[in-house]
Image (cartoon, rainbow, N blue to C red):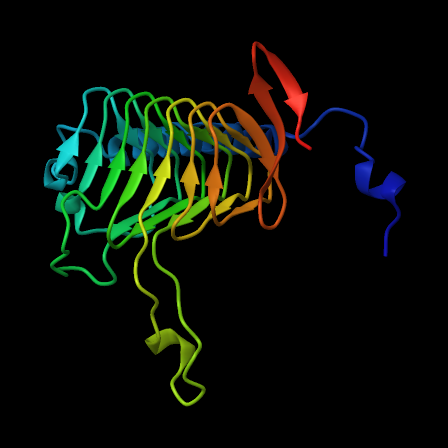
Length: 228
């Protein structure tokens, strides 16, 4: 196996016309690929005036779902506010299968000026309410339904628990890899640390972390205090 020095070695001297032509063609191909990919990303994005965007129950002005998305279905049960960006490789769905009739409308509501990070998943069955100005890191997962396991003779995939509404208050931040499970209620201006799992209620203006997430700090009487 060649060592690093030999791999990085570049022969000295004048290059032949073939080497120069090959290098020029390679640079042109690289530039063309970048231009083409940028065009695909721009044209593949979902906005309020696109054919896909018009399927949503609401899709606010200047909002966008970046290309490529992964799973999006039952869009008419999903409402997106204005000036919201949903990153690429995001799953966004209402119900379990395309064409399912849900019992509530909307099932998923995302407010104004939100930012949903790359690779995240928002899967609603009953009610997921995300307020205004909510930002998330990458790979955040939010759902209002989980699987049961009580019957040992039935596959877990066929056992479901009752849906429980989820809400995330205005101005909150969910760090990378946060998981928000059924029944979670996150208040306003809450910081949830990366990798946390939210299962219960987090009050307004607090910092929470852990599995399950616990309050570490709260804003009380004009100052931040450590939780006791």
